[in-house]
Image 1: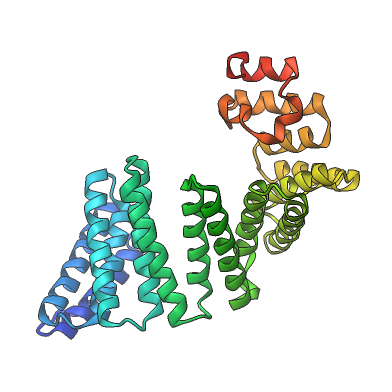
Image 2 (image 1 turned 60 degrees about the vertical axis):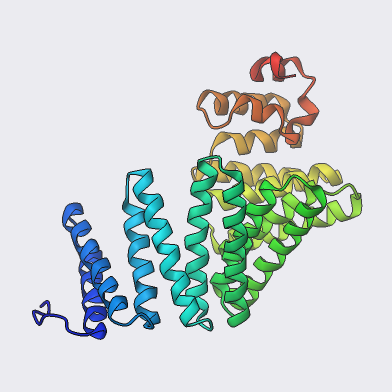
Length: 337
């Protein structure tokens, strides 16, 4: 039963905030849940007003504001809440700089702001926030090198930086750092590492595409395959994990001329589709495996279903061997070549 004694101290307001937050989590009615969340936020604000040095109250205030931001439908309201979330988490780490969880939460909040800036096409703001996000995760793993979540989040943020980087040398360096972060996440918690293996496979694959040196490129292709195998071992019913394995096998098999690897890739891609994967992954694998007729059939389905844009297919190196094929050009659009 809710406590009816009026709060008097920072500790009272803090406890009330926890109680209101628990009630909000359990409340099925959206309007009432929103009211409880507002009361929770107000309680934590009262707590930090009463004792501005109380790091735990700042920490929970950031979490509560972040949850309200997650549920906000208005873009401007959500952006304003994200700014408040970052400010609260920043205050928490200022007060408790040895709290790895606080640094991780600050990184997550900064990442949300960076994503919003990216959607708004504000590249300068996005890049600045992404740098701050990466710095926050680095502080988290410096405080606690065994924090697998912080290492994982660092890998994600570095990968996002790499995607936006135009300079080949810097992008290559960011991919190396991303790979190392996922390796550290796996080492910190090998029993719960499937998502890290999945992302590591993607990072190896992206890194391979940047390499001119054949030996290094093929080595990275093999590492992508092995990481993807680990991912499907941990996520055996995950369509995306099987899709990633299929593409890793197909790219390695095509580059190394290994027919058995290509055949395994097609089997993995078909299995991914049975689990719910889209047709485009299977189409790309079939193209790399040399089954041009079925590859084009699956591509037609993917284009018809809106899984992929024609201009993206035209730029996809998985289809390089078919770029001059009239059937491929007719499907994609001759004007794109």
